[in-house]
Image (spheres, rainbow, N blue to C red):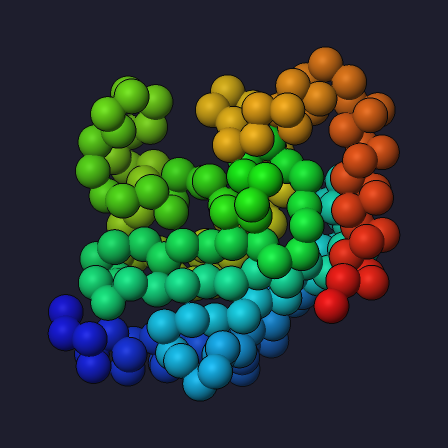
Length: 168
């Protein structure tokens, strides 16, 4: 798909997300009027057992090959989670390129597919916050704490939530 067609698709998807009232807790906008870079705010509902009440800012960066290739997502608000690298990059199956996993951990059907949208990505990330995958962690320290010291994990996450309310 040509870059101008990709830009048009992304513009339509952004408009859809900004006008769709069925997606509570997600706000999106462009970074520097660049349709390939979105600023996202996730306002996590209290139903999320760990991150509820938090306001987490992230960026979605789309490649020119989108929707054939996935965007990258990186939290700008510091967040402690087994599937988020310490630098904020999100590690979730649907953001992995559509190819066989060389480690044999993920099937191709779990990875990126052009049917995914920014909306499905963000809903998957919110779901991931509630249900970490500690079998293939991006943050080994967080995964170990999640498994071995759940109270300590919860305490660390609650601090992230408090800090997210003050993060600029």
